[in-house]
Image 1: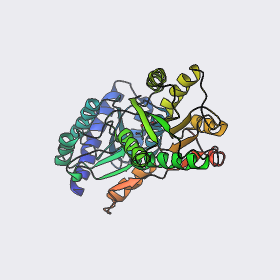
Image 2: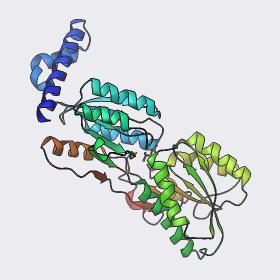
Image 3: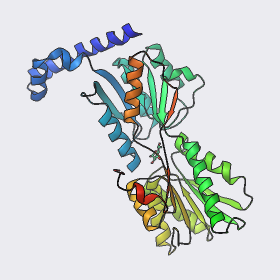
Length: 343
Ligand code: GYE
């Protein structure tokens, strides 16, 4: 295993040097040429090559997640990053993973757009002896040995926190015995982020006969689709009490639809809004009272992945599942956290 990794690094170094020499000979990449000439060995041989497939660029959260990975996988940190964007399609991600295998990268890191359908390609990575680290969302495979570890967010726990917050909020306002009509804007179909949040929320909802989930509609984690789905809900139902929107981007779209329909939201509004992610823009709305609560989903996972790889390189055992820390933000605590929020 060790030998294989070293062999791959050296092969990669030779290929990279050959390509660079070719490009520099043609007059491209002049700055890079200078680096290589100064110290060819240190520029390439020591770097750990990461093939990283990001699932898309659908949300503010995703942009922050990509930035966190890029910030962590730098040459200064000892990495050579090959990054590809799956554009929200599993087939694109599978193609990228296959190309990482044929490039004989040291590690494959990927954020899976959907949970199922990875068994074959991950078996190919395993056969090639390339460790796989899953980030952000989770996969659903029969054989857990197909990936080395996961660093990500616990969507089921997030959904449950949303339900528990509603439970408490209704109690506080003495509304716990009222009929509560709920609509859910779900994220990408078949993603662990959407399915986990739905299941977690419903785990709480099913305890209450007076909570009625009127409808669920997929907004694919984007503002445009969030708005579209919310419009159809508003046409169909005149008595919505709660919107559970599985990310902030869809919430922004949904809020537009609600406001255009002449309704208000938030702590003094007609409709309670529960959102997920806790991006800066959404936290501003929690602060001003338009969104009632935002369940944090932490995109800053790059450092944790780097740490995990360092431990694997040192031959240490690592935990298989590594959820990142996450909070719940409502008007009562949001002020304390605004300053540290960069995305
Ligand atoms: O909540 C959403 C994004 O997978 C946890 O994907 C992530 C989700 C996040 O597009 O905004």
